[in-house]
Image (cartoon, rainbow, N blue to C red; front, side, top):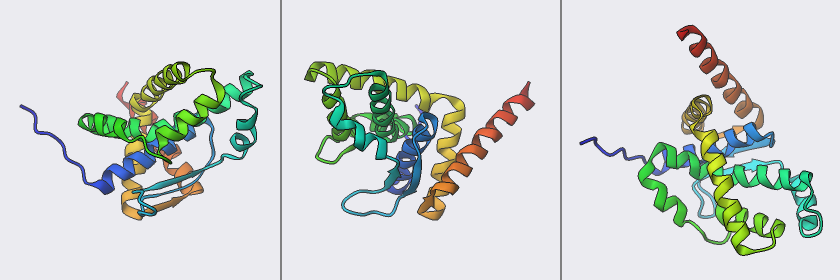
Length: 185
C-alpha cells in the first residue's frame, strides 16, 4: 500500500496560486502578482489582468461572438487552474476542492461568467465541465506541471511574487524542462 501524501495548507495554497498563474501564462492572461499571505479568509491571491474581461462581460448576453467566447473561456480556465493543480498534487483533495462553492470562490465566479454567456444553467454546467477538462489537460502536461511545481516552490520561499518574477520563473522552468527532454534524446 502506498502511503498517502499530506500537504500543509501553505503548500496547497502555493500550488493553487501557481496553478492559476501557469494557466494564465498558457492562456495569455497577464499576471500582476501572486501571494500566499492569508487575507480576508483566503490562503492566497492572484492578481490578473481583467480589464478586457470587465469591459466585455456586460456584452455577453447580446454578443456571443468568438472574441467574447474566447475571453470568457480563458478567464474561466484561469479560475479553474488553482483547483486543477491541487487535484494533480493530491488527488484525495478532489472532493474537497469541488465542494468549495461559496460567494467569491473561483467556481462561483467562473459559473457567473459562464451563465452570463450561456442561455441556461445546464449549458453553463456542461461548459464548466468541458473547460475543467481542458484545464486539467494543461495542468497534466509535463512541462506545465514542472512550471507549477517550480513556481509553487518559489512562492513557498518568498510568500509573494510580482509579475516579472512570475513570468521569469515560468519561462525558465519551461526552458529547463525542454532542455532536459532534449538531453534525454
